[in-house]
Amino acid sequence: MTDNSMICAGIDVGKSHLDIALHPGRARLRVTYDIAGLKALDAFLQEHDVSRIGFEASGGYEWRLLGHLRAGKRPAARLQPAQLRFFAKSRLKRAKNDRLDAVLIALFTASLEQLPALPDARFDKLAAELTYLEQIEQQIALVKTFAETALSEAIKRRHAREVARLETCRKAHLLRLEKTVRDDCDLAERLDLLISIKGIGLRSALCLIIRLPELGHAGRAEIAALAGVAPYDDDSGKYHGRRRIQGGRERLRKSLFMCAFTATRHNPDLASFYARLRQNGKDHLCAVIAVARKLIVLANSILFRKAEWTPQYRK
Image 1 (tube, one colour):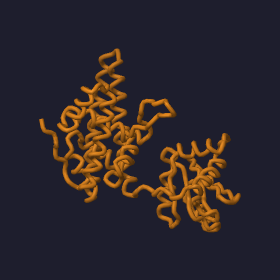
Image 2 (cartoon, rainbow, N blue to C red):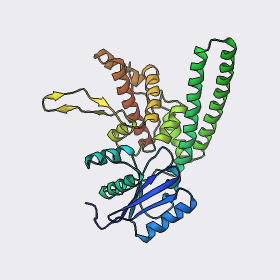
Image 3 (cartoon, rainbow, N blue to C red):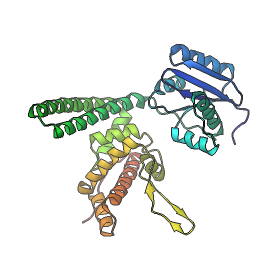
Image 4 (cartoon, one colour):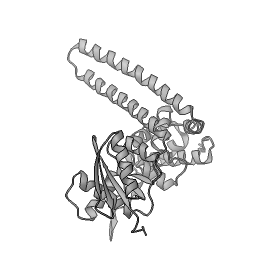
């Protein structure tokens, strides 16, 4: 059980300001989201002898606060919006504003038996660089769509030149990202181990390393859930519904599915597994999801053993 005498702070992160609330107690504070505001936050936490801090992930605005709290001595946790949303529903809370959100975050932080660890600092820059690469890829797909629907040949040529420019940027940025990862000996070893698995290329291996740092350090069920490929039961009494996947990290799951599609053709172990599922009557999508789950569990095992992948398939 949590200690009722422990002072917990909840921080609602906005674009220009932070709202802070304490539980237990009615102390509240709003500060600007800048250097002066963070100093005022530290003084407020020190004044009230806060034991733990919780704040909500807010679309990237929380990164500066995360770095600031990581450098401090107080335990802190970045909470998922879904956690707080369902917690509010469980307490029948419908009203929502920044100050009320801070109170809710503080209450939820106090209810946790153990705070989830903050992400490793070395992944901050890598995640930002990978997001930039994904944005370039989104631009390429968008411009290609524009080119397909353009009526003028001159406009199509302009779109083609823009696609070529973006492709050059994508390749250059991918090489820079790989170099940054290889500058870290531990991450370089993990990258080589993942690339050894047939079906996982450089781009997808980088995504797995950066978006799923728990890989190689968690159990198979947990790693499948984090990737969003764990099937969940839907049973009640005599009703037995179809098991479905849900949740997980969306950007990671997209890369994982691309690996799964490739593995069904070029990885002998997973290709035979996919064929067996299809022969047993499973539809294509269900079989690919099963391959994706098997692939992420395999990658987890490879990194745990620190041994390169070797095929087990015998024709």
